[in-house]
Length: 269
Image 1 (tube, rainbow, N blue to C red):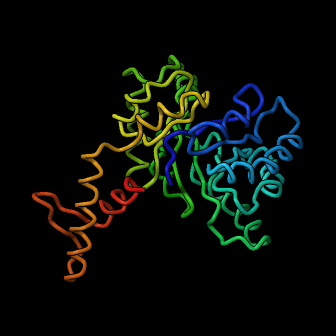
Image 2: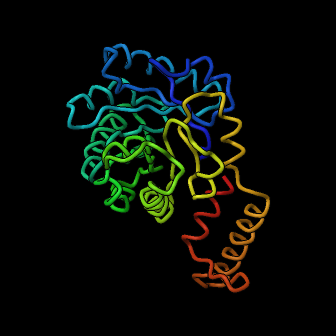
């Protein structure tokens, strides 16, 4: 699942029409904007999901945190065939995701959707979240990505809300490492993002403030020809080793294990 360019739409953001006409991989609808009646957000999201699918993009939705007591009604409105994943904001501990997973499973089961179909993206925007990033990354089996909200994190630690300089390097690295360790996609969210710099830091995609950046993001986060060739070689070597009964493969001086191959296949799409 490619998540190079993820565009948020809604109040104060890009229009759905602009996002659908863009090169974005995914479109995110929000049910968590306190400035808009939540019933209106739910209705708009429910109507938008099939349109996003028809445009060949992945439909995502930002739901309200379990502690708001709005999550169950969000899920009732939005957990329908076609929804690819939900973003959970302000994740500070694994239990936040477990609470979400229980609700998602309830509505998947009740609507004939295979349990686990709706994946989860955890947004990390605090020091507590960064310090528990690895626990968050494998809190539930349906995890898809970790999203680092650079501005939210900077505010939480009383820092400057910048995304690419050294001041947030530790937090960015912690989120990337946690995501990659558990075969998730690390995403970056912020106001002004150095897309190429974030790709070089290990991120796999970005939440974009405008669909006009989708082509740039796709180019920045697409693997190089050399990376694709290496991934194919890793997969081929591993499959050949497994056919001979081995559990790892050798590729030059590199040891290729199952985790390495999962990342290679993720890169190959």
